[in-house]
Length: 205
Image (cartoon, rainbow, N blue to C red; front, side, top):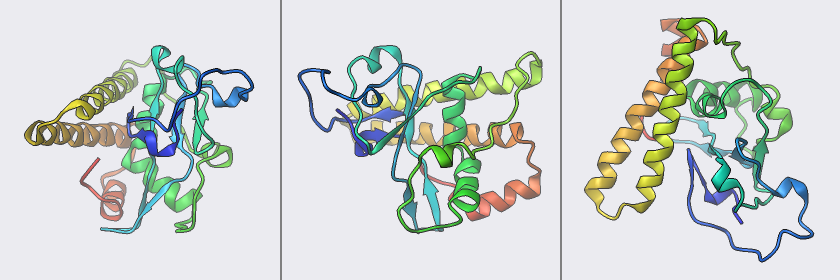
């Protein structure tokens, strides 16, 4: 059983507890492969600037069979033709965290829930996968998200500080690449990117 605290960006760490049987559990507590799990309560962070941090991961087939979620986790079903890894990259991007905080949550600092009314208002770009240029960017985001998932899993198993530091720097570099591809897909100008980079932290996970 996992709750919001067990969700990390691109991974799951630990467990809330265990159950012996699935009997009598509501269907929405069961995890379906390919769905995106996101913390229900969004973290508001004041320093160095006001921002939020969406935290979630994609659940693969082998993981889904063993998981039950609490109501502190929202499960997003991917009904599009896009990879869930692509959508996760969008959700974790600096652009989308900036957009959701300012235009959906209206810069609130009270408890913010990531539920249907919020996710329904997230603009997802229309990518023509038959277009080679767009397809290349799409595939790059998917590849980078998969790399991030692998690095986060390795990070939970590492004991030595220098190994963790190296891996964390790799994660930061990958996140920056994802941000750049997302800016490109949404066709932001250099001036627009500068606004977001100024109003949103440029370091960390």
